[in-house]
Each structure stands twice: as structure tokens, then as C-alpha cells.
Length: 337
Image (cartoon, rainbow, N blue to C red):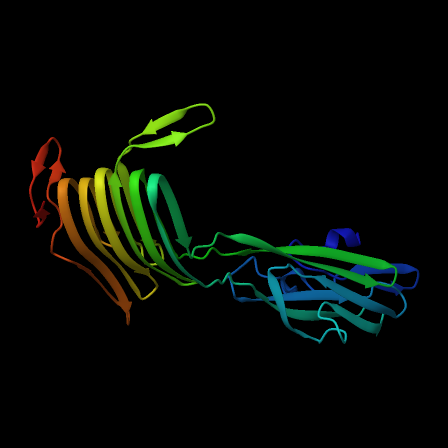
């Protein structure tokens, strides 16, 4: 039996034992395949991973065995049994291992969970062409961590590696922005944590012509204003989106919080233009279009506690006109200017 064929996919190391009977050498695995412990194929961010390394002496005399681990930089060593060599967390020296003997090392690692905190405050104002974009997200994509091991046993060397997929983190996303020419002023307070996002923003803009000066010529610009805010809580399957466009002026303010237990969006807007508003949650959705010179106030809130969830929508001031096909339906409450 060829020792090279004894390495099992997914196992960090598998020793091979040899016994001499007269002039005949018999080779066999020290453990059956189903008894070999493997590292997990997947894990959660911030969770623990246990790796099991199997080593053995394949020579005919006692040898010192040295096990050396190479950890993925996205993991942290917690503990092992037996403990590593003094002053090290990735090296084990097992002295005088008898021929045909084998053993195991169990290593507990912890994956690094993405974490960040930020409190942002700012004010922007001016006259000209403005284009702003911002995005905050607590979501993280799936990634792979790799653990490698090398075993030195006498004149023999074994090495193997194991990939573990870290599951994606489902969270929340807040995206916003404005674009247009004329006067512009925005104030914002943003609070970012690894599990929640909060924002308090106000925007005031009025359309007027401006000139973009280039090296050899100038370009006259007169663009209407657009603004949008998108708040999604994928952890709870919630989403809101307000989009304002083709506006000659706009005064907009909104507060939002996206978290596991509470999510809400409060909006106040005075607009001369068009607005598209959407809210979606488990079991329902709202989709509206507003056209004209209008003022809107609204609040959508979703709360999760003790396995009970609820969604409330402010009944006041939904729209000044909702388009249905080629017709027009007046509904809700609004204030005209």
C-alpha cells in the first residue's frame, strides 16, 4: 500500500504505521477513515473552529515528531490539547515516538468577526453642480480561511491544508445621495455599529443655472434635483425606498434606524417634482408615485421582540396623486402649496 494514497481529502494529516514480520513489511492506517477527525467545511464569523491533527511514526525506530501549524490571518488561536511548545502557539514537539505509534492534537481557533464603530457628523453647502453618494452596510460576504499543517517525523514529512467557508453575515444597508445644480445644503449624523445603522439627514436644494469652467471652454448647466434614500434590513426582510426626481426644489429630512430588534424610517419632504415611494416587508408592500407640488410626512416602523413582530405605517399625508395606468387617483392626505 502506497502511503501517498492514504491521505484522506479534508484531513489535516494521516499517519501510516509499518510493522515488520520476519522479512515482510505490512503497512496500514492507524485509524479507520471514518474515525479520522476533520476540520469543519463551514463556520460562522466570530465562531470557534476545532481542527484535529493525526500524526504517527512510520519508521522502525523511535523518532521525535514536530507538528507546525500555519494559521489563516483571519483566525485567532484559543487553546489546544496538548499545549504547544513553550513560547509558541503553532508548534508541538513530541519526543521519542515509538514505531507504529500515533497520536492527535486538537486545536481550537476563533474566526475574526468584522467589527467597526463610527460616528459621523457633517455639513455641506454651496452653489453649483452637486453630486453626493453615501452607503453604510453591516453585511459581509462569504470568505474562505485556510489552515495548513506540516509534520516532520524522522526522515518523513507530511503536509496538508484545509479550507473552511465562513458564512456570510446578513445585515442592513443604508444608501443615499443627491444630484442637481443650484444651491445645496446637507446636514447629517450617522451612527454605525457592526449590528445596526442609524442616520439623521436633512437636505435643502433649489434649481438654478450654473457654469462649469473647463480649460478652453465653459459649459452651462441647469439640472433638476434628484434625491434618494434606500434602507434595507435583509436580516428581517424589510426595505424602504424614497426617490425624488425632476424637482425644481426639494426640502427633505429623514431619520432611520436599522437593527435586529427595531427598524424604522421617518420622512418629511416638501417637493416640487416627482416622488416614488416603496415599502416592503414579510407579507406585504406599498408602492406609490407622487407628482406635483406637495408635502409628505410619514413613518414606517417594524419591531421584533419575544417572537412577535409588528409593522405600523403613519396614516397621514401619503400622496397628492397616485398614478394608475393612464389615469390618476387622488387618495391619502396632502398639503398643497
